[in-house]
Structures are given as C-alpha cells and as structure tokens.
Image 1 (cartoon, rainbow, N blue to C red):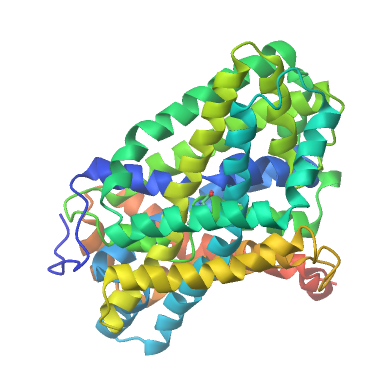
Image 2: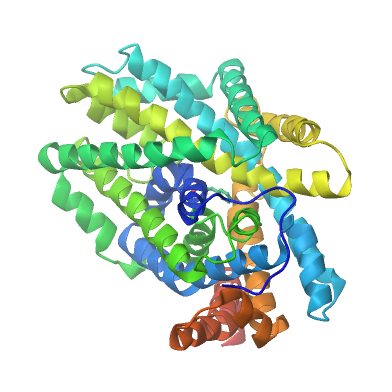
Length: 459
Ligand code: PHE
C-alpha cells in the first residue's frame, strides 16, 4: 500500500475493477477499431504493426505505469498534480506545462474524435434501417461519401455526441458510465469475434493475416514509424493526462503495474482482432487497404450486409462502437474539467458546459474539412489531418516523453517506491530502467528520424 496521505476532492473508484474498467474504457475506442486498421493499411501493414507492437511494450507500458503513478500520488487534475509533485520533489514549477500540454491535446483530440464518433452514430441508423442489406462495395462507398458531403448531418451527430460526453462528465465520471462499461466492452469484443469468424469463412483470411503480420520493411517510411509510435500513445490514452486523472481516483492499496498490464493487453487485443476481421474483407472484395479514414465504414457494412443476422449484429456493432467512443471521450476532457473545478472554483456542471461548447466549436473545423473546406490545406493536410497529426504524432509522444523523464529522473527513488509499494524489486527496477533510458531514447530517435535529422546526423 502506498504511503500517500492525499485524497482527491473529485472522489475515488469504488474498487480496483472499476479503475480497470474505466481505464480500459478510455483506452478502447475509435483508436482501436477505426484508426488502427486504416493507418496500418496506409502504412503498408506488417512492418507498421510490428513497430506499433514494439512501441506498446517499450514505450506504452512503462509510460502507462508512470502516468497512473503520478496521478495517484498527486490526486488532482494533471496540471495541479504536476505542480504539487514538482514542488515535492524540489523541481521546477515549469513541469506544470506538461499538464497544460495535456489539457490542450485533450481539447483538440475530442474536437475531431466527436465528429468521427458521429459517423458511428450515423451508421447505427443506416444499419438498423437496412441500408446495407445485400449491398455492394460501390453502394457502401456511396453511403459513406454522401455522409461526408453533408455538413448538416455531420454537425447534428457531432453535437449529439458532445452533449452525451458532457452529460457524463458533468455528473462525475464515476457515475453511470463505469457500470455501463462493465458489460458493453465485453459485448463489443464478442461481436468482434463474430466478425472475425465471418472473415475467416468468407473473407480472404490468409491474405489479411499476411498483410497484417508479415513485415515488409520496404513498405514503411520514417513517417510511418512516427505514426506507429503516435498511435501507441493514442490508443492507450497516454501522454495527455487522461490516465493520470483516472489514476488519481485509484485506491492506494491497488497494484499499479498489474492493472496497467491488463489494460494494455485488452487494448492491444481489440485492435488486433479488429484488424484481423477487417483486412480479409478488404481483400476479398477488392478494396483498397490504404483507403484512409473511411476504411471501417466501407468494409464492415459490406460484411454485415451479406451475413445472416447481419442487420442485428451490424446495428449492435455500431451501437457498441459508439459506447466505446463515449467511454474514451469523457476521459479526454476530464483533465480540463477537473482543473476548472479546482482552480476557478466553479461547479462541475458549469465547467463541463464551458469545455463542451469550446470543443464543439473547434469540431466544426473537422466537420467542414470533409466537405466545404476539403481543399483548404496546410502542409498538404486538411484541418482534420492536421489536428490528428499534431495531437497523435507530436503532442502525445511529447507528453509521454516528459512523463517518462519526470518519473524516471526528476522523481526520487524513494517517492516512486512508496507510491508503487511493490514487493517485486526486479520488476520495479526493470520498469525504472525502461522509463529512464529506453523510453525517452526511443521517443527521441523516432522524432529525429521522422524529420530526417537522424539521417543527417549519422551522415
Ligand atoms: N484511446 C482512445 C482510443 O483509442 C483515444 C484517447 C486518446 C482517449 C487519448 C483518451 C486520451 O480511441
């Protein structure tokens, strides 16, 4: 048990399992089912997946443990946690900037995350109304294109999703959602397994597996490696304070490392199963693996449209995807809301409304980037592309790097030992080593190589 006397004014999880569920709810989301398959497809498959898995182990897991630990030790919003901990460790108050970076990243991510979640809501309706029964690849494509071309529809679903998110946040994250997550997550997994079975029987299964798991290193670029690492952070909700704030509600007697491993394993399994279900369908129907953000929305409806009971399973799948997105989105904005409550002395409800309105407005940029502003580009990226790139590939890894440096170097061994309160000295030392040397080095190398600087430095 940790020696930490602090407690959070925002409350505490009622058991260890509630923390596991909430954190898994945060981690498992659009990142696993929507983003992972399409970026794996765009970046050549196998080699990308390998780099991503490597990043999960070498960077993701150590940072996950560190982020939970910092959160539990500070027991406040990430900004104030970094303030207290840096003071306690006799370090510069500038470490607070790590908290600010996270709050900003959370805002930016939620603004577009909500628009994509809106697509999922739209697909619940399309699925349930039989749009895809016996459909062809061309028709599925048309439905998707028409959705993106319709700013009003996109805005409507985006608005609905932001409201749903802010309602939960306003009532406190430990309210209803943690209980809902308890059976929604397993249900989502069961449907993914059903999809996997369908893909095995009706898809080009071997081709799909080969694409995902045979590394062809000529297919991956420096930028691909950066995207793989960025995704390791994104999918585990790391580097922006979401896991830190959830850690701040964790009970002092629970094991951080064991819990973190469970979350990481669950999240990775969901992504891999999603990939294994999607790519066989892609290849069996002559679709393009590099189709981009529409990939899941262009492949799965095709499978559901053809399988028996597809109307039911398809509708259920998209409902569950919405819930998975929902349990992630609340953790994106929780750091900002808790900070407002702590420092501006306003009620949770008011803080939620303020944050909701701000992200909603920003999200309109993403809505328009798919239609009216589709040609408005900076560095050859649309508004959505730019936000996605900036947050997932720059801000989250940077946040994770700073977390690793703080927990690895700035914090005393004693404080760490006390907070981790583990008897497994060997595991503790292994984690500490990864955090101090391997994680920061890996992140920096990936940053450098993706800018081409590494090549210049090494001649
Ligand atoms: N991990 C979530 C997903 O995979 C997204 C997320 C990122 C949530 C960062 C919180 C913080 O969908």
